[in-house]
Amino acid sequence: MHVSAAEEGVVSAPVVVVGGGVAGLAAAWRLRARGQDVVLLERSSRLGGLVESERLGGQTADAQGWVLEHGPDGLLASKPGMREVLERLGMQSELVTGGEGKRVAYVARSEREALRLDPIPTSLFRFERRAIVELLRSPLLSWSAKLRLFAEPFVRHSARADTVAHFVVRRFGRELAERVFEPMMRGVYGASIAELGLHETMPKLADLERRYGSVGVALLLAPRAPAGPGLVSFRGGMQTLVERLAAEVAPSVRLGVEVESIQPARPGAPTTLYTSEGPVAAREIVLACPAREARRLLAPLDPALGDELAGIRSTDVSVVSLGYARDDVMHALDGTGFVVDPALGRSLVACTWSSRKWSGRAPDDGVLLRCVVNRGESTPELVQTASEEVHRFLGITAKPRLVRARRRTGALPVYAPGHRERVAEARTRARRFGVELAGNAYDGVGVPDCLSSGIGAAERVRAA
Ligand SMILES: Cc1cc2nc3c(=O)[nH]c(=O)nc-3n(C[C@H](O)[C@H](O)[C@H](O)COP(=O)(O)OP(=O)(O)OC[C@H]3O[C@@H](n4cnc5c(N)ncnc54)[C@H](O)[C@@H]3O)c2cc1C
Image 1 (cartoon, rainbow, N blue to C red):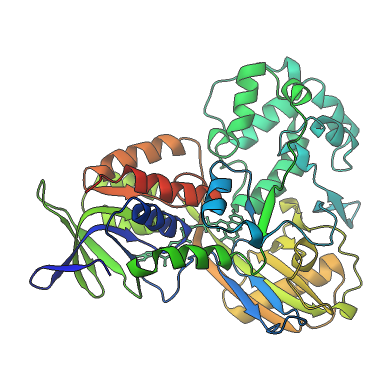
Image 2 (image 1 turned 180 degrees about the vertical axis):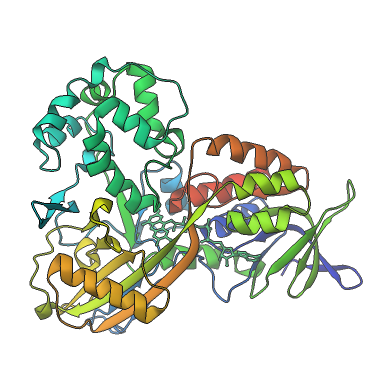
């Protein structure tokens, strides 16, 4: 541990990283690579934060067990910097790119009182040339909504700070917004497109409008989709990434240490972090904890900074894993899962068919489902909600063999219009106290975004 006694009762560490999620781990990894003395303080007894895989059974080579994902179940390898991170960590051989299910996800919705699963036109979200054809063929849209697509090139450009909802309704009409964007974006961000900022969550759409005057025309001119994996995971689940990072930074890590408050320094003097294990003096701090926690720690130093951070709302997410005997599941599960149209008013937000989406997630005679639900507090309540919904949507009546549930309070930040300006202001203010902000509240919610956020914060830390 690179901690040395400074003055009585106070240990000192040149750089302290607060939070051992992927952002904090990436920050510590980068700082160590730069030859910095760094200590990572994590309040829980494990590293990874929201990333948490649970492996059950399958200890022998010929017996596959269960791999449950209580947090993220994949990451976009095509995101900037991700390839380099995976290469540097030597994780290329650990990657898995998919399972036996078709690479199709669905929207569950109701038509004439009947529940149906219709494919999501995902090429639209990858900005691929075939997006327009896919939309014209999609059963999700009525004929009038399809005709409305042809009017898009004539819609006037707007420079206002849009929400995703406002932008999509303005350019493409209400039906595309409600039937495609709303369920899809809610499944990813846990928030409505009426709240999500366009520039914050889909900057490419705004960029295409600005450059081409029409998103539709820009899509038709788009190059063919690049080859190579999009969404990937790891053979042993997402925790494998945490384990690799943890191995890189092990000497710096202190688990079970909570930062309770931060005392600002006199100019030129180290800042003191008061922790559950005593004070630590630090020259620089990377706060890689959720925004509400950053706010709690920083508001006493600068109320205006506290206000900026308080403006980043976050939503709760509950994940329920259900493992079934294969014989108990009659549904073909021919795809990767589905998101639920919020207009149905159900408690199920999304259901991933994990054992179809990825290989090696369940024994040969098992089926693993991962449900995101928005009703229930306790584990039994969450499991009951998920089981009832799985019965309704997939017709599964059998009792699951295996159940797990995690309720994550304030897990997903909502990127509202103006978020980027808010973050820029918060960062400028935090820097005056030698604090860098990293994590899912600032630079994107995906795991690759959080890794980049941690690495970026580490690079902004002044060299000793
Ligand atoms: C259900 C779910 C599914 C998701 N699915 C995907 C997906 O498929 N793909 C994808 O790319 N992303 C996904 N995400 C998003 C992604 O997982 C998260 O945004 C990312 O893991 C957040 O990492 P982080 O390091 O910023 O924060 P966290 O993981 O929240 O880590 C913060 C850490 O700080 C610690 N901490 C907090 N306060 C203190 C303190 N005072 N002192 C010390 N330590 C403290 C916490 O204990 C925690 O370990 C998903 C998220 C959820 C919740």
